[in-house]
Amino acid sequence: MSFDDRRRNVRSLLFFLVALLGTAVLSFAGSFAGAADRGELTGRRYTPTPADRALPPTVSSAPGPRVALTFDDGPSPQVTPYILDVLAAKRVPATFFLQGEHVADHPDLVRRVAAEGHVVANHGWDHPWFPDLTPQEAESQIGRTNDLLTEITGVRPTLFRYPFGQPSPGGDAALARLGLTGGVHWKWASSKPGDFQCPGTDALVDYVLTESVDQAMILLHDAGDVIGCPPEQLDYLPRAIDALRARGVTFGVVAPSPVRSAVNSGSPAAVVPR
Image 1 (cartoon, one colour):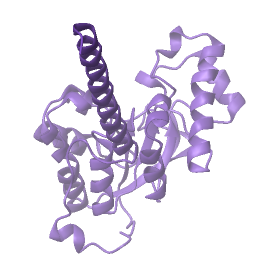
Image 2: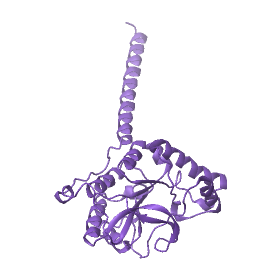
Image 3: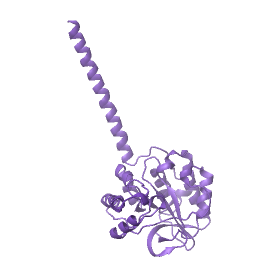
Image 4: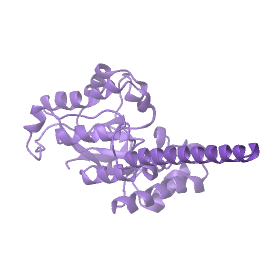
């Protein structure tokens, strides 16, 4: 065999090995992405406690203060499944203001949110600053997200929360045309840090308990900046739920209301039983 023949054979073998390695990498990446899309957690899981397992299938809404836990910016495979695990174990309904681009990436997580009885709401497509958008861009952000959520869940969302809580005339006009209740804010009257600031478990429990008065909509997140917080910070959620229940607080979801909420910065919405 000539030197040129040997060189061609070596080159062919190298090409084969590179192609084989590339196929393996693509296969692994596809499997990883598929696992995330199926809602499998890439972070922590929550294990129900004996007290969780002793709860009745449906926790009754007794008279007394009622709050809504609301989660923005999701879904994400790093955080959303853990939050859903906790809510399921604790028999707590919640309201999820979902971001369109994340919905497109993780539709099975959206289906899980809806299937487990939570309210699916609209948070725009890619979390823009609405005052900087043209009216056409604002309508696209809202309408595109609502269409996708409707396609995935079979139910058209009726609630919209502006990213950063910042409305715009174009956004308000789009909400009116699309028939959505917009400007859903939250209660944050204290100076205590929120979850996206990564203050830690104890500080977040304090934040949730401090803000949880009757009709409060508590601002929390299941994507975005919280993904970079220490994973153990998520322990705030089961602890806060247990502490609120011990105080006689019940949990509801956000619903449109003709009366603006003095508790939640004038939001045209109320906390109702689920």
